Length: 203
Image 1 (tube, helix red, strand yellow):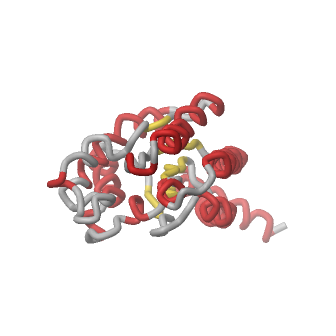
Image 2 (image 1 turned 135 degrees about the horizontal axis):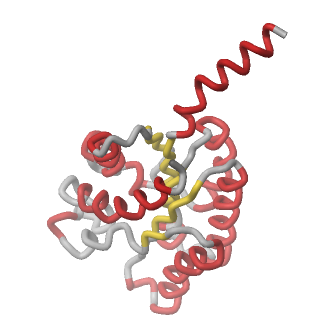
């Protein structure tokens, strides 16, 4: 009986922290490739949450080079570890850059969203685009996945998180794929209003 009561007390004490957890499930964009950790959009987003009196703690589970299949393979462990209230799903870009099947990417992202919801987490889908040199048909198929998922699963969507960054060379690294330190705050500004709406639904 004593152990049961102690376990209940510990669970109640830990609940608020877990309930305020935001997980970023992403690839190199989420991982802040090429910039200092404290300059990355994830770190800046954490600062903005604090400035606005939001108690949420961000846990960054982004891995450079990860695909939607990689994210699906590790989502259960991530959910078990952090029990997040919100998941920022920033995956799919590497699927496109590698020319992988859009249908498989859509299936993987769908399953990730399903598993997040099954654990009680809200999902904010962060859309990505790929360069036009992949051909119009493939690019259209790829980019269409995000709004299709948002509509079919009723998931809030940031259409393109690099919207104000990708075409500005001053905000991009030399590879033309990753934002530099100047571009990171712009990503926060793009995500912020969408995240506020999601947070309002869990507070």
